[in-house]
Image (cartoon, rainbow over all chains, first blue to last red; front, side, top):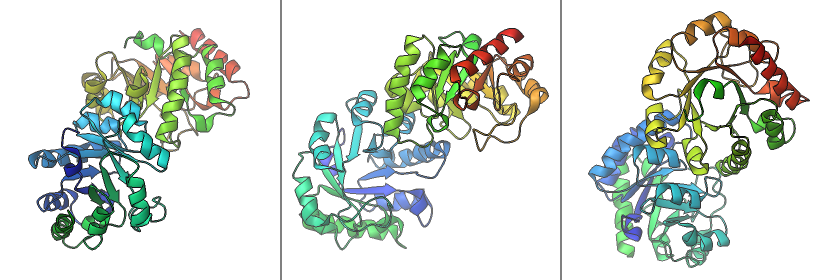
Length: 212
Length: 212
């Protein structure tokens, strides 16, 4: 990763416009100014054209703050806007292909579902892993049951890649995720669903800081 | 277009695995052997991973027969497998971006919805247009009402780009579409929904030939 791996994913915001209370860009800005170190844009229901427009607007913001923008699922949209990377799941385009097309400096996040997928990820060209749901989540309907910190730790230990914990993380349990071996925590609703997104980001950032 | 424009889109098969009666690859092979000059792969319901796998398999076939493979909607999948081009609609990634990322020899098809979009297409980097539905169609739920040959002709005259007519075309009305100014006809159900896809392709090819 051009942006030094583990510290980049310390506080990782998954920005899903469908789950933002107010304006998505203003929410992202407030969160970035209060400790978010990386933003992933996830647009599951918008048109591709709108996804491109949103990505461009967000990239201006993340570049201004010198943090990476990762595009969920869509390699083409990441390439078109010049985002820093893409985040892929097991049903998305293969990691090896994204690495070949995206080049060596392109950030590729991956959400493995099995031990074998965790173990094989580094060799396939993955930059960091998202492992979860560590706690119960309502943002992602297909996320499956919570792993819990112990199972998260076991999976985390299978790889030398940086790992961001995801799923049901907020200011109260972020420290538990870090203590379980995460290099960072990914959040959506804890920030997007808050009445005070900037304050929620600050609480998360402080909770992570205390645990390090 | 690396493949000489108008003749390439003469008989254009839109291969949608959801609408194929039998095996998609075998159907495509039979159609190609009986006059299909270009294949577009449209996967609206499969995972991206499956879309990549299907694209790779189909590309082997189209390369063997020296005809282009166009990927519907997804620039990333076209780039990953090395397909000849992509077909975009007005809600997809912008044509200008696809041209920049895809390069000068990449085929970019576009389905405009307004006169202005038809007129602007050449300047934006479009290789050919799909205009329709010229007749009534059941394959594409969001296709809108049939234009009819006269309105198709009017739209076709707005651009110097090659135009493929689409929507409800079969062996009986393909000649009407060509007479209305189309450089070729795009079909899905006339071939995919037939008990004899190879025979349907042959009938279409002959109907086009008679009209030229």
